[in-house]
Image 1 (cartoon, rainbow, N blue to C red):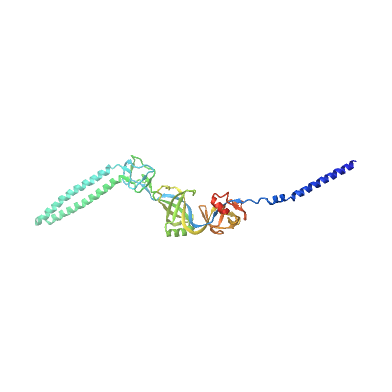
Image 2 (cartoon, helix red, strand yellow):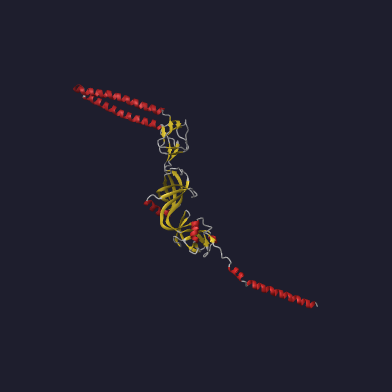
Amino acid sequence: MSKSRTIRWALLIVAIAGLGYSGWQRLQSHPAQADARKRVPARAAVPVRITAVEQADFPVYQTGLGTVQGFNTVVVRTRVDGQINRIAFQEGQFVKEGDTLVEIDPRPFQAALDQAKAKKAQDEANLANASLDLQRFTKLGEFATRQQTDTQRSTVAQLTAQIQADTAAIENAQTQLDYATVRAPISGIVGLRQVDVGNIVNAASQTGIVTIAQIEPIAVIFTAPEDQLPDIKTALAAGSPKTIALSTDGKRMLSTGTLSLINNQVDTSSGTVRLKAVFDNKDHALWPGQSVSTRLLIATLKDATVIPDDAVQHGANGLYAYTVNKENKAELRKISVTRAIDGRSVVDEGLAPGEQVITAGQFKVQPGTLVTTAVASSDQAQARTTSE
């Protein structure tokens, strides 16, 4: 009895399993399920940003580091001895050529001038009297000896020469008096003064009163590698090459000027040559002693193939970039880059003007990947054009 019950349970289990397998087979072969398998979504397009390869003139710059210095720098010194009565400038002030800087006590020099003028007046009176005596001796004729006449003529000549000396003495005294007022020899910015009111200054002292730096125009001294010297000489011979002064981090342009000269020798210890550029500096953006980055325009590449730096990728086999074909699929192109500046690179091989290159999103892209610009590109018009 127990054995037959076990057999029945076993047969029942086998029957249920058979029915379940049969239903599963029918479910897999149902047309709706087959259509569902066919409607598995394809791989989504990768969002990227693209831009067109340009054909444009590309400026070639020689970059370097430089120091700003005054176009002219003058240490103002006194040319006469005396006590300072007045200082007529403020430290850091912009002064013009001829402006009064310092006044030295003028009384000794005024007295010397007055004395020279009095001496001339005295000699002029003596000359007038001697001239009258000469006229008398000449009129006397044979009643005056030849010796008397010659002597009187010599006296007149001596007094005439003395008056000329007096005139020179007056001019010298006037010059010394003028030197008592110290004036700016050039226009520029005055620095820290080295003397105060009441100080005694003298012409023999090596310590100046103040320093004036000319900043309109102003100069920048910078260096370039000696192997760039032929290109720089060629550019200078063709005109005045454009020179740009930037902040030391190279992010902010300060002023634009021109190269004025190349130093007459190369520094053998560093293999560089010193260059001097001149800037108008009307806005005083450059200041003496300031450190700047420089860019010297040495050539312009005509009709160069140019792409953004973001499109250039670095691989194990060199540089490459991804282009987008008409089917919106990515293609890998090996490229050769010769120049790069300000976020742009010149491509000699691998790309042609008008092609589209990927500038963002490359990390998700492989050759043949379907791409879209609908999300990544901020230029909606460009996105629509690419999608079409």
